[in-house]
Amino acid sequence: MNAVRIGRRRRPSRVAGDKGYSFPRIRRWLRQHTIGAVIPQRSDQLRQHRGRPLRLDKDAYRRRSVIECCMGWLKECRRIGTRFEKLALNFLAMIKLAIIRRCLRILDLSDTT
Image 1 (cartoon, rainbow, N blue to C red):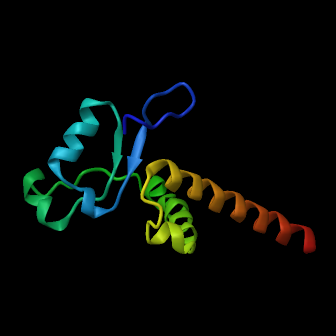
Image 2 (cartoon, one colour):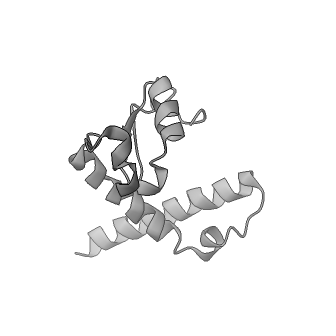
Image 3 (spheres, rainbow, N blue to C red):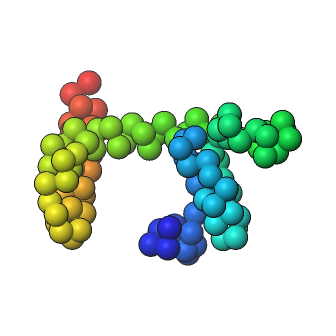
């Protein structure tokens, strides 16, 4: 999270995750750093809140699908999906190359229709 930079901000204002990230330690860290958690509560955690589930911004949670789709088509590139590049610098270069390739494919499809 410390490496994320959004404009002038050092950290995002909210973070979305699935139920696998619903742990008190993660929620506490996000709260300490004033980052909103858009994480649904696991069913085994309802007792901690006396049957009162945590609030979940469902619209923000639905927007996670954009990231999920992005990761899906990014993993279509076999080099990225299998982490063929072991050095972080080379791996980041391959991710950028895959994104450029995807953008060119989208631009090419929009010109033919």
